[in-house]
Length: 313
Image (tube, rainbow, N blue to C red):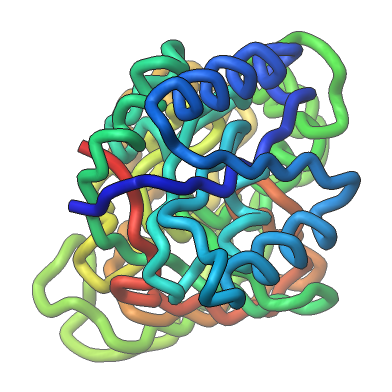
């Protein structure tokens, strides 16, 4: 437990098709009403947000009791660069499109007052993060899932679409991406495997296969509830790796509705592994972390046990 007397509130008032503004106003108002000293950050860029949060956390005399993100998974991903490893708890008031981290932590996604009350309750939980080092990008933390290949292309396309709003945007982006090539050659190098878990081999190994996509999860869902890593746990010290092997467009078309509906996918072409580190190589395949661009493969992804403290149930 932690007493939240001061909070640095990082907002994206444009998130969630206008929800961000209302959610930010509700959160700031509720915190202030309960006597919390609130400092709001509305920075014009991700880099400026990170700088301002870091400056605040590095000042012992003015260090807040909590950092609160009012926005979606993208804003949280930005703030992780400043908060990870500090021990300062992160609170979440969801107002984005996917809100997958909030879902994973059982934070209400449609009630900013209830989400703010979780911050005020001061109950903390320590969870893992993932770390990705990919070609063409700075190393990044991620809290939910890193997608590569088809799913990363879908995310990048969905991010560029203005309509429709909500998770259905990912479904339409996926249909559009089906028109391009699917499976590509992957090399998957697994290090630090969890003994006996999922489809894990007996020892560290390298797998060469054709795959439509490879997702690496610290939590279970992405894209607003798509259950891509259904067995992932946020506090086990491992990352779950889901490999969707070579399938036809027709098979992929049949898989998409179930994935979009948050159902578990147990297709014969799917393999799942649990590991502390994975190196992925696939020529030109993009990567996204928490829905944000993270470079292209090859990339190394590592579990970072206990890297984040959150305010949750």
